[in-house]
Amino acid sequence: MLKNPFDDYIELIKNKHGQESWITVYKSTPINQASESVGMYSAFVTNEKSVVALKNTSWDLTYGAGSPGFVINYVNGEKKVNYYSNEEEGFLRLVLIREFHDRMSDYVEIHQEFRLFHNLYYLEDGKKYIAFDEVGDEVDVIKIYPDQVQIRRHYLSSFMAAKQMHLLLYFDITRKFIHNEKYCLQEENSHLIFSIFSDNYSFKGFNSFSRLLGKKLVRCDRIEMSRVWPFEVEKVYLDFIIGGDVDSPKKYTCNPEVLSNYFGANKEAPNYLTSVFFKKEVMQKYYSSEEYLIGDGRLSRRGSWSLRFDNNAKDHVSVFLGDLGQDLPTKEQEYWKSFNIFADGKKISRTNFERSFMGNFSDPENPEHEFKYFFSSFQVKWFDKHKWHLFLPLSVNDRHFFASIRSMLINEQSEFDSQILALAKIVIDSLNKEELRKATGVSDPKIGSLSLFENFLVKLNTQNLEKHISSLKAIQSIRSAGVAHRKGSEYEKVISKLKLNTNDFQAEFDRILSNTVYLLKEIPIDNPN
View 1 (cartoon, rainbow, N blue to C red):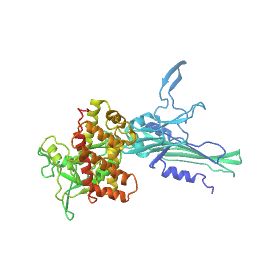
View 2: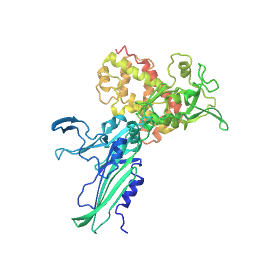
View 3: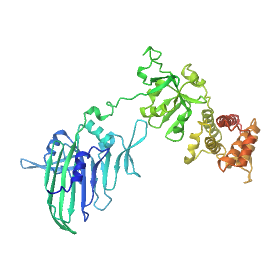
View 4: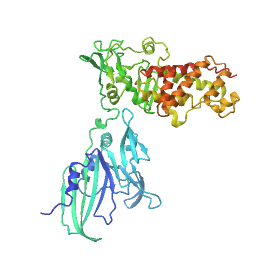
């Protein structure tokens, strides 16, 4: 019995092709002296056209066609010229092959409607199209290689359901043999048709070839399975700890629709404004990426989601139960849940209480927010008044230092070091030495930035000058002795001299931030002379 020369491909096409996570919608290997060449193509097709297409193995479309143009018909002997945008009625090419006949490099384009439907973004460097999921993470949707294109099945299925069009996957594989191959077969069913044909072939040492030609139909789901508005997948709401203890935790869903409120809804359920507590370490992820914006009482991801929360308490972070469900996508809820802790006497901050329950304006308690607010405000006011920056704006590559400034999340040396380095970059390294030299008349290049700043503050009649300069020198000393260099006896001397409590780095850094805010408040902006 003759052996089928395409057993491997037929197994792939029957059982996997069109069902993989990544579906090959285009592939073209050159027909040359190699023993195998592969061609794959694809198109969306209406149900009516799919019935006709599965009656023969020939491709309904060819690689290079698909451009708009004119068509000539003769009606009763009269010539008719009509413009068309797609002459292949009932078919939509997923991949267009753009050929420039050696004048420019050929390339492939993806059907525009598919790209717009999923709002895909093209990354030139990676040769791929991406989408953004519910939490704003990048998702690879289309991968473009020199000889093939692959698309993530989920996005193909969604578009097919929305268009109510099936997907036709074409395949054409040729294998050449030294021996005389004689194998012929045709097989078909409701979703697949293919044929195998063999013949003589005398070239480059080969004596015969076999060709596998056909197409496979992947049917679309009902329109509700498009999973886009108004057919979005129903959001999943997680349970969070709202009371009890380790032995008997009390948990409840964050679904705002089933929580009680002050208007009489769901009276037996916990209130929307029930506080849920989390370890401060939950914020590490957000401080580590410029994707996120962290403000006083607000956390957001650019172009995605935004959460109202309480980050003014010293030892924890809290969110109202209803806000967890209202503001956070399910994937982000899962992350927060891993940091969920028992209340154990914890309370929301005074700032959050005043704002959320009393309706009052309230300054932040957290030194992080206080520092960022006063530093940014000072920069604007100073420049508006004097038309030069006392603290030079950070370069693009250094802006992350300002975003990363925070009340420490964990009481560890490494985090203390990183925060000191960031603060030194913002306040000391950014001092505008050129303008300070002009203002003080000091031209000696040996005079450093802190000394220039001190002379300048003297001219401004700044109050508590000794304390302010001492605070800045402390930041510089810690950075120089232990952060920018290997720690040793000099670092220990600095720590001892400054009387830093190494058992509570969190409190020490908060104190340093507060001292810096105190300095900013006392620099007389309106009296530079």
